[in-house]
Amino acid sequence: MEAPSWSVLQSSGDEEKYPDAVYLSEGPSSCSMGIRSASQPGFELVIVWRIQIDEDGKVFPKLDLLTKVPQRALELDKNRAIETAPLSFRTLVGLLGIEAALESLIKSLCAEENN
Picture (tube, helix red, strand yellow):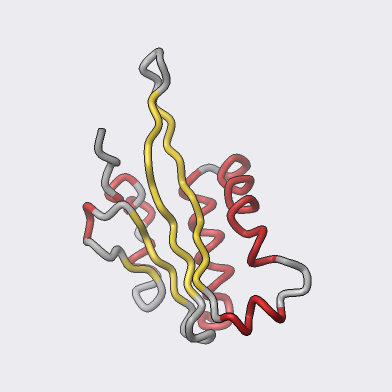
């Protein structure tokens, strides 16, 4: 089964709120959303959307976070924040829900740009 489009998540208007940071590489039917930091060149987060269907036919949306960061940033990341970001994002989705977790992630990456 094909993954749903990002139109499900676009109701929050993240692309409109953060046009310099948020992009859908394949448009509204994309299965991933990128978030770039203008203040940190080379630092990008990619959210990949997929669905899982159990034996009873229940549909579960799954969002995974992938990091794209310069090697130097990885070397300087002594607290392993970049390495643990995917698991932390899953926890955030569980606590806040999909839209609020995405909004929180975008705001945290774009905080310097919006001040």
